[in-house]
Image 1 (cartoon, one colour):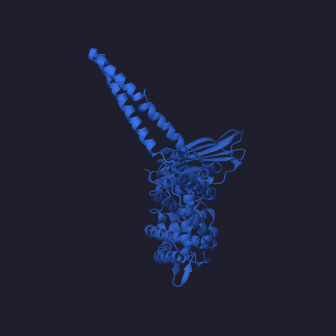
Image 2: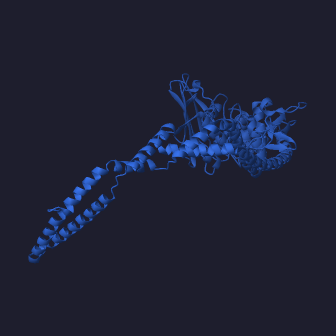
Image 3: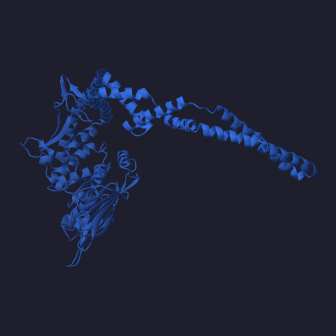
Length: 568
């Protein structure tokens, strides 16, 4: 739901802030007052093309900003999350267009692309009139409209899951086959490299272990003489540290017998003697284990040399050598068992294709049933909306797959093209004049007709359609009297399920408003300004009376307006 629309320095609008409400929001005003300018500004935040000529004279940039209530819109939440944009119950879409031709887009104050803004707009608004932002004029949406009407979401999701599984397996098979020639060409190279690495058979962390052992062996003599000298200093020489500490401890014991304040130093002397004992013991043991082993020294040097050669050839570190061995080992095994892998994958694909094909045929059958009902319902509503000789057809087709290897769906003996929505390609056809064959809706409908056609579609899809806001700009083109009354009634019914904003010149439509705005153009000869104001009940009656009889409103005109609006 659109809560507020803020526009600044756009065409005739200097600054405007509109607070829309739930239900049917009607906008009226004299021709040229700027009603469509408001819709044009709104289309900016829906990602439509920006025109620098629309920036108000004297301003650096035009701004359009919409605040939407979007709580519960899971599709939108998922999309924003994927695009790393924070989601909240209120969504702000903002567009800035400078006179230099630059356009900036924001979603919740996060800079974004116009394309992303448009995708978000497609989830929030259907705008009908002389605008591009109309779902009926995008053929790809027709299948969704039909599925919504038939409540086929569950079956569509079931197929999408099966399609995804089959598609993933086909991609894996395609990638595997693409690697076949490469694997065969490299098989001999991989075999040589595996033998070369396995001949050394290095393990993780081995290099640092060997380098540490090498340092010890290369310095064996120095270690031996140093530890022997240390042992002499600590324990065996005439003035050994151990003996001196013992003497000091004994003296402290004598002193402690005289003065108890020497008790703590005496204990520390005992601790020191124990530490020296442990240190001397460790050094003696280390000294006894020192090995003079030229053969082992040469063995380590050779092995480190072999590891260095492997590092130079396979990545610069022992870890990359080991990773390379694992990789080529897998590739070599795959090359040796390639046909087994292919066969296994193909069997899985056959199973998933069969599952997807069965679901696709059930889904297609349901769509044909739903299409018949939808066609009749749309034709009936079109007649009520002033297109009495209208014909409406839902064209459901399939096409043969150009590449059977990539195909997922099989019907009988024929492989068919498909998407994640099934094997059906759906397009609405229409004829609005008697004697004419139905043709693609996107090619033959005029602006006014497309709005009434969409209104007819929305009437039969009202409860299932997920777009929360519908905007009708040209819906009253070419209609009057009884048909206008029917259009107004349809908009009113539609507003029970959607927020509706409609621009109209007809009192029969304006009389159904829940909220009524009037657009006015004010200013002097130098500068015109478009403003908008919300009408209270009395002002609404007067505005409807003006639409009925012109600028001069009479008492009888007011009474007629009240009667039309159902107000006593």
